[in-house]
Image 1 (cartoon, rainbow, N blue to C red):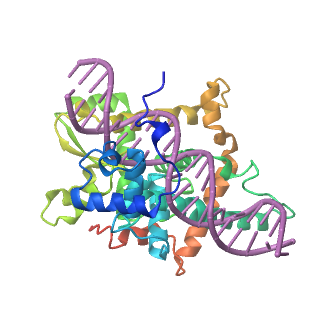
Image 2: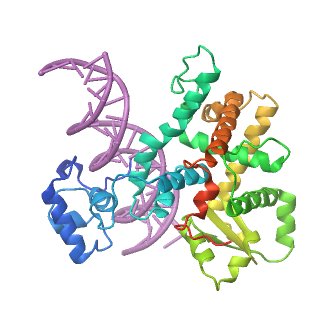
Image 3: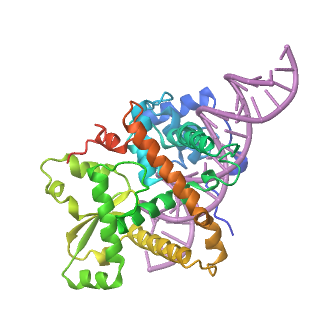
Length: 338
DNA sequence: AAGCGATGCAACCGCGATTCC
DNA sequence: CGGAATCGCGGTTGCATCGCT
């Protein structure tokens, strides 16, 4: 039993939008708004389109404040930095780039920026591997990993370096103060996920977590308000599940743990287990999990990749083509004040 | 000039999250 | 409170265009 379709698939038009359809949709929304129901919209307008398709067309193309093409270097930097920090959360990234849509950014990343990064990797690697014709897409390189896997790998490495600060850092860029705080906060969450410490937290008086997210906008709001006391309480922020932040204000927090926080803890546990299995060279891992995290088999090459990335970032941070996220988060669009 | 692979982008699809009744 | 409806997101696909041979 699948889910019921959102519209009558047989009676809706698919494919490219005609100028007439565009005009009808645009005129209607500008006059009356969406009415809070995209599914009903096409009927009202009199076009044979799925409501979801109308929503997409409006958000990605017809909206008046849309910017198309021509990403600036600054935008490149923001996208790269945020992708490295939070992964493929295109809507969150898009929220930091006025006029850009998640779809646009996703396409731009997939078609250009990724190549910009991995292309350098290819170049760098092939210069070291004499006589090698290795293509990163041939099944042995990092590109065989899913975005999610890369994201997880990055997170894993962050956590590793936090847990063992004496290790050579493989995180690709110098963190700015906010990112450093967030990384510290991850450590706090790690500690809190320890049952003993969790117990301590629970017994140590009421706690409360306010969740700001998943969009970074929320952080922005907190940090751009000069009169907001939270500005001075950054140590109390903890990162949950990538883009979202939780703020530890006091009472009742653990009971109010959000879904995202639970997911984060589950993910952390998963990573811990995998790391454990890796260390113990265990082969008893469930096959599905093994498949999902196959890349850990190739951890050495992955480390190599991240080390390379780190070098590239450092080298580039001195040039005008800076990939250094510390620059990015200083960007005025984020308006983060320390 | 034609063929063909690569590229870029708009649009679709499936599914989890959220809202509504 | 539970199920249905809707929203919103990320991944994927399809197709027009480009550029190389």
